[in-house]
Length: 198
Image 1: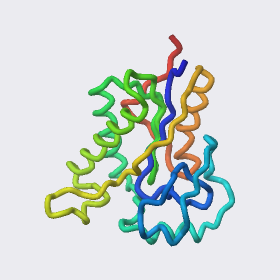
Image 2: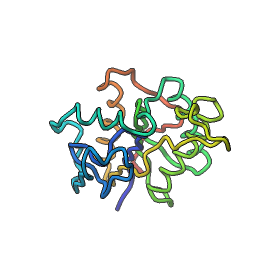
Image 3: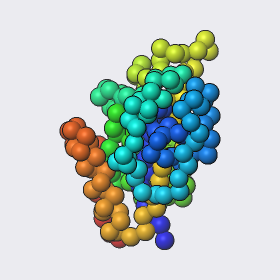
């Protein structure tokens, strides 16, 4: 039985559908990306981040996007964390680990009556709301006449089902280590609770 989820939420431009390392996408939905090739669908659940690839091709594809690839500042990360905290408090999500990186976020969340997809949508929505309220949305400068802004999150999510305490502990450690591996300070969030076996 699934006891928790490791969820990865990515920002716009983090992992393109035709990334040379592969992607989970079936099609390339942005015209500006088509010249960089078709979708590179794979079925593996392993991380492809360290697979050798044409880095310049990937960078060129990102530069061609209609809106720039999102890179969160420290202040924006604080707003995102505030949004995650509000979503968790509202719906009773139990979050065992969270790392908010400059272009994606990792969370380990206890099984809930909601699916991982609905939890992710809720977290993204509340994070976006906080960024707008704080005047920190990365696409604020592209605001439309009606006041709306382009979506800053990638449409889908990446998730791993965790079936036992060993897997949960491993995921928690991976998430905690994520900022440090990228040369960033460790992150501590008030909405993160210790994982305790029942």
